[in-house]
Image (cartoon, rainbow, N blue to C red; front, side, top):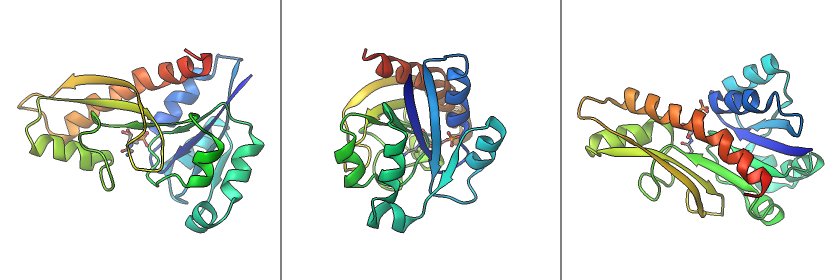
Length: 189
Ligand code: GAR
Protein backbone atom coordinates (compact mmCIF):
# COMPACT_ATOMS: atom_id res chain seq x y z
CA UNK A 1 0.00 0.00 0.00
CA UNK A 2 1.30 3.46 -0.94
CA UNK A 3 0.30 6.44 1.19
CA UNK A 4 -0.22 9.99 -0.01
CA UNK A 5 -0.55 13.05 2.23
CA UNK A 6 -1.99 16.11 0.50
CA UNK A 7 -1.55 19.78 1.43
CA UNK A 8 -4.02 22.39 0.14
CA UNK A 9 -5.00 25.98 0.94
CA UNK A 10 -8.08 26.68 -1.10
CA UNK A 11 -10.85 25.23 -3.17
CA UNK A 12 -9.29 21.79 -3.40
CA UNK A 13 -10.55 20.86 -6.85
CA UNK A 14 -7.21 19.14 -7.52
CA UNK A 15 -7.49 17.29 -4.21
CA UNK A 16 -10.92 16.00 -5.19
CA UNK A 17 -9.67 14.99 -8.62
CA UNK A 18 -6.72 13.10 -7.11
CA UNK A 19 -8.95 11.37 -4.53
CA UNK A 20 -11.36 10.28 -7.28
CA UNK A 21 -8.54 9.08 -9.51
CA UNK A 22 -7.21 6.74 -6.81
CA UNK A 23 -10.60 5.67 -5.45
CA UNK A 24 -10.62 2.43 -7.43
CA UNK A 25 -6.94 1.74 -6.78
CA UNK A 26 -6.58 -0.51 -3.72
CA UNK A 27 -2.81 0.03 -3.67
CA UNK A 28 -2.98 3.78 -3.08
CA UNK A 29 -4.34 5.34 0.07
CA UNK A 30 -5.02 9.07 0.55
CA UNK A 31 -4.06 9.29 4.23
CA UNK A 32 -5.05 12.89 4.92
CA UNK A 33 -5.42 16.41 3.60
CA UNK A 34 -3.68 19.09 5.66
CA UNK A 35 -4.67 22.73 5.31
CA UNK A 36 -3.53 26.07 6.70
CA UNK A 37 -6.96 27.67 6.21
CA UNK A 38 -9.91 27.04 8.54
CA UNK A 39 -12.33 28.27 5.88
CA UNK A 40 -10.81 26.39 2.95
CA UNK A 41 -13.39 24.75 0.74
CA UNK A 42 -11.10 21.73 0.62
CA UNK A 43 -12.27 20.83 4.16
CA UNK A 44 -15.88 20.60 2.91
CA UNK A 45 -14.68 18.34 0.13
CA UNK A 46 -12.85 16.15 2.68
CA UNK A 47 -16.08 15.76 4.64
CA UNK A 48 -18.01 14.82 1.53
CA UNK A 49 -15.28 12.43 0.33
CA UNK A 50 -14.81 10.91 3.78
CA UNK A 51 -11.11 11.80 3.91
CA UNK A 52 -9.22 13.01 6.99
CA UNK A 53 -9.06 16.80 6.85
CA UNK A 54 -6.67 18.44 9.30
CA UNK A 55 -6.01 22.10 10.03
CA UNK A 56 -2.73 23.60 11.28
CA UNK A 57 -1.70 27.18 11.95
CA UNK A 58 1.44 29.17 11.15
CA UNK A 59 3.01 28.53 14.55
CA UNK A 60 2.55 24.77 14.32
CA UNK A 61 4.03 24.74 10.83
CA UNK A 62 7.04 27.02 11.23
CA UNK A 63 7.89 26.99 14.94
CA UNK A 64 7.32 23.36 15.95
CA UNK A 65 7.62 19.79 14.68
CA UNK A 66 3.90 19.28 15.19
CA UNK A 67 2.97 19.09 11.49
CA UNK A 68 6.06 17.00 10.76
CA UNK A 69 5.10 14.54 13.49
CA UNK A 70 1.53 14.27 12.19
CA UNK A 71 2.76 13.67 8.64
CA UNK A 72 5.20 11.01 9.88
CA UNK A 73 2.37 9.03 11.48
CA UNK A 74 0.95 8.47 7.99
CA UNK A 75 4.26 7.09 6.70
CA UNK A 76 3.79 8.83 3.34
CA UNK A 77 5.39 7.62 0.13
CA UNK A 78 4.57 10.99 -1.39
CA UNK A 79 3.54 14.40 -0.05
CA UNK A 80 1.56 16.30 -2.66
CA UNK A 81 0.99 20.05 -2.60
CA UNK A 82 -2.24 20.68 -4.51
CA UNK A 83 -2.89 24.41 -4.36
CA UNK A 84 -0.88 24.88 -1.17
CA UNK A 85 0.36 28.45 -0.81
CA UNK A 86 2.84 28.48 2.09
CA UNK A 87 6.54 27.83 1.77
CA UNK A 88 7.42 24.37 3.10
CA UNK A 89 9.71 24.52 6.16
CA UNK A 90 13.13 22.88 6.41
CA UNK A 91 12.08 20.19 8.86
CA UNK A 92 9.64 18.68 6.34
CA UNK A 93 12.03 19.00 3.41
CA UNK A 94 14.88 17.39 5.36
CA UNK A 95 12.71 14.47 6.49
CA UNK A 96 11.16 13.74 3.10
CA UNK A 97 13.87 14.21 0.47
CA UNK A 98 12.46 13.87 -3.07
CA UNK A 99 9.08 12.97 -1.66
CA UNK A 100 7.38 16.37 -1.76
CA UNK A 101 5.91 17.50 -5.08
CA UNK A 102 4.02 20.63 -6.10
CA UNK A 103 1.94 21.72 -9.05
CA UNK A 104 2.34 25.24 -10.38
CA UNK A 105 -0.12 26.76 -12.88
CA UNK A 106 2.50 28.09 -15.32
CA UNK A 107 5.63 27.08 -17.19
CA UNK A 108 8.30 27.61 -14.52
CA UNK A 109 10.67 29.41 -14.18
CA UNK A 110 8.21 31.88 -15.70
CA UNK A 111 5.57 33.22 -13.35
CA UNK A 112 6.94 31.59 -10.21
CA UNK A 113 7.94 32.90 -6.80
CA UNK A 114 6.19 34.62 -3.92
CA UNK A 115 2.77 36.05 -4.77
CA UNK A 116 2.57 34.04 -8.00
CA UNK A 117 -0.31 31.68 -7.39
CA UNK A 118 -3.74 30.93 -8.80
CA UNK A 119 -5.30 33.79 -10.73
CA UNK A 120 -2.35 36.15 -10.19
CA UNK A 121 -0.43 33.86 -12.52
CA UNK A 122 -3.11 33.82 -15.23
CA UNK A 123 -3.54 37.60 -15.08
CA UNK A 124 0.21 38.08 -15.53
CA UNK A 125 0.26 35.62 -18.45
CA UNK A 126 -2.58 37.59 -20.10
CA UNK A 127 -0.99 40.99 -19.38
CA UNK A 128 2.28 39.88 -20.99
CA UNK A 129 0.53 38.56 -24.11
CA UNK A 130 2.09 35.14 -23.77
CA UNK A 131 1.22 32.73 -26.57
CA UNK A 132 1.56 29.67 -24.35
CA UNK A 133 1.24 28.69 -20.72
CA UNK A 134 0.75 25.40 -18.91
CA UNK A 135 1.55 23.43 -15.79
CA UNK A 136 4.75 22.48 -14.00
CA UNK A 137 4.95 19.53 -11.62
CA UNK A 138 8.15 19.74 -9.61
CA UNK A 139 9.95 18.61 -6.48
CA UNK A 140 9.81 21.04 -3.59
CA UNK A 141 12.88 22.60 -2.05
CA UNK A 142 13.32 25.52 0.36
CA UNK A 143 12.65 28.17 -2.28
CA UNK A 144 9.27 28.83 -3.84
CA UNK A 145 8.84 27.10 -7.18
CA UNK A 146 12.51 26.20 -7.64
CA UNK A 147 12.82 22.42 -7.18
CA UNK A 148 13.66 20.07 -10.04
CA UNK A 149 11.00 19.85 -12.74
CA UNK A 150 9.29 16.48 -13.12
CA UNK A 151 6.86 17.30 -15.94
CA UNK A 152 5.66 20.35 -17.87
CA UNK A 153 2.65 20.39 -20.18
CA UNK A 154 1.83 23.34 -22.42
CA UNK A 155 -1.35 24.86 -23.75
CA UNK A 156 -1.76 27.75 -26.16
CA UNK A 157 -2.99 31.20 -25.16
CA UNK A 158 -5.13 32.87 -27.82
CA UNK A 159 -5.52 36.62 -28.24
CA UNK A 160 -9.15 36.18 -27.23
CA UNK A 161 -8.34 34.34 -23.98
CA UNK A 162 -9.08 36.05 -20.66
CA UNK A 163 -7.47 35.18 -17.31
CA UNK A 164 -10.60 33.10 -16.65
CA UNK A 165 -10.37 31.07 -19.85
CA UNK A 166 -6.63 30.61 -19.29
CA UNK A 167 -7.38 29.36 -15.75
CA UNK A 168 -9.87 26.91 -17.19
CA UNK A 169 -7.37 25.53 -19.72
CA UNK A 170 -4.70 25.19 -17.03
CA UNK A 171 -7.08 23.45 -14.62
CA UNK A 172 -7.99 20.95 -17.33
CA UNK A 173 -4.29 20.12 -17.75
CA UNK A 174 -3.91 19.79 -13.98
CA UNK A 175 -6.84 17.37 -13.73
CA UNK A 176 -5.54 15.27 -16.61
CA UNK A 177 -1.84 15.08 -15.74
CA UNK A 178 -1.33 15.54 -12.00
CA UNK A 179 -2.83 12.21 -10.85
CA UNK A 180 -1.02 10.33 -13.62
CA UNK A 181 2.34 11.84 -12.67
CA UNK A 182 1.67 11.03 -8.99
CA UNK A 183 0.93 7.43 -9.98
CA UNK A 184 4.17 7.24 -11.98
CA UNK A 185 6.17 8.62 -9.06
CA UNK A 186 4.61 6.07 -6.71
CA UNK A 187 5.59 3.31 -9.13
CA UNK A 188 9.14 4.68 -9.16
CA UNK A 189 8.98 5.54 -12.87
C1 GAR B 1 -4.11 25.25 -8.89
O1 GAR B 1 -4.28 25.84 -10.15
C2 GAR B 1 -2.64 25.11 -8.57
O2 GAR B 1 -1.84 24.91 -9.70
C3 GAR B 1 -2.35 26.45 -7.94
O3 GAR B 1 -3.47 26.72 -7.15
C4 GAR B 1 -4.63 26.18 -7.79
C5 GAR B 1 -5.45 25.46 -6.75
O4 GAR B 1 -6.70 25.10 -7.24
N1 GAR B 1 -1.13 26.40 -7.19
C6 GAR B 1 -0.32 27.45 -7.06
O5 GAR B 1 -0.56 28.53 -7.56
C7 GAR B 1 0.95 27.18 -6.25
N2 GAR B 1 1.85 28.29 -6.35
P1 GAR B 1 -7.59 24.04 -6.47
O6 GAR B 1 -7.59 24.46 -4.99
O7 GAR B 1 -8.94 24.15 -7.06
O8 GAR B 1 -6.97 22.69 -6.64
